[in-house]
Image (cartoon, rainbow, N blue to C red; front, side, top):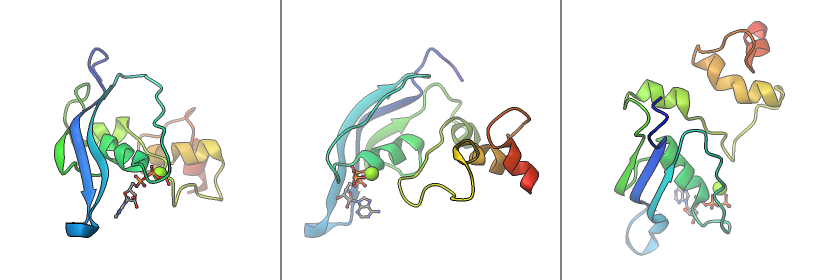
Length: 126
Ligand SMILES: Nc1ncnc2c1ncn2[C@@H]1O[C@H](COP(=O)(O)OP(=O)(O)OP(=O)(O)O)[C@@H](O)[C@H]1O
Ligand SMILES: [Mg+2]
């Protein structure tokens, strides 16, 4: 990862669900940048588009308008998947796993888990 560039950059990003009179504009023209290592909070009332914006930032959904890019990453999808993880609002945690194991699950599933990182015990459980 190139530390001098934004990890995520949204430029006038929008996401609309449905079409016609029933269309829902979940994210409307959002512009923001997230530097590597930054801690940010997205706040707003229920239904204001927080989760949809996170999905756009993670590359899980595509903006209907505008752009979401990852300047600090190479542009290779595998690198984005390794560097950007999402804990979904619902369904979310695996009940049988503890917090560290849940957080480390993508590392195990992605084959990136190694001794000393969260999720290592999960790999042992097979
Ligand atoms: N897959 C979808 N299909 C249709 N509408 C959707 C979809 N996902 C979200 N929406 C709608 O988009 C709007 C924003 O939803 P979103 O889940 O992003 O809001 P939120 O801020 O995360 O809400 P909450 O605080 O309740 O989690 C809502 O009106 C929601 O009903
Ligand atoms: Mg949400």
